[in-house]
Amino acid sequence: MTALLTISGLTVSFGSFTALDGVDLTVHEKELRFLIGPNGAGKTTLIDVVTGRTRPDAGSVVFAGADITGLSEHRVVRAGIGRTFQTAAVFEALTVADNVDLAASFRMPAHRLLRRRDRSSVPEELDRVGLAHLAGRRAGELSHGRRQWLEIAMLLAQKPGLLLLDEPVAGMSAAERERTGELLTAIAEETTVLVVEHDMEFLRRHARAVTVLHEGRVLAEGDPDAVRADERVAEVYLGRAADREAADA
Ligand SMILES: Nc1ncnc2c1ncn2[C@@H]1O[C@H](COP(=O)(O)OP(=O)(O)OP(=O)(O)O)[C@@H](O)[C@H]1O
Image 1 (spheres, rainbow, N blue to C red):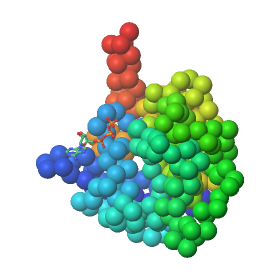
Image 2 (image 1 turned 45 degrees about the vertical axis):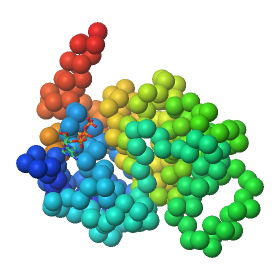
Image 3 (image 1 turned 120 degrees about the vertical axis):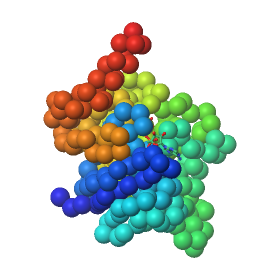
């Protein structure tokens, strides 16, 4: 297994509060890694550092052999890291196909961009996420789930080496979650994927490798069964989820 992303000793403080406290994390090529942890564990902060939104106070991020620590967001995109947010960022007034086409241009030199003007076929990325039949539809008309898939297609069009997905199945129906799990598994055959996700059923069905963050540190790592069997994880994460479910009932 070749390491694609190596995070070492990553530390981020906001004032006197330490959000990440010496995190080490290695993600290998073509891995589908899940990152879980209770609210405030530092998951989003970790993704923010990798993508250049937040500068770390200490530690390093190495991607595909290059030190990308502290690079600006657009340089990180150019380096080959794509990211989704909890709310899909699509251009509502444009068609589904044009969204993907536009996204593809973000990593493309201008002369190649001009040549793409005569595009006539549906981007292959729409096929991959099952939206080819909606290529001509305005993105603003898509359901929540389909918007998320469109955003994934837009990232794929940028040919990233690493995809970072922040809670991709939040708000999706059971069928959409299942489809998304299959999609991520298929994507990970070619592209490395790191998913932040709270949905334990989704995790149980689709995760192969899980990292658990708690209070800014890596608490546990391994396959989903081992992680679920870890008493510390049960206490800080599953225990709280169980409490929440009990409170919601
Ligand atoms: N810009 C900021 N300024 C101050 N504190 C921050 C800032 N960003 C995050 N934090 C704090 O850092 C901690 C980690 O936040 P983060 O969003 O990374 O957690 P998370 O694991 O993604 O949580 P959630 O599951 O709720 O999204 C939280 O306590 C949060 O309040």
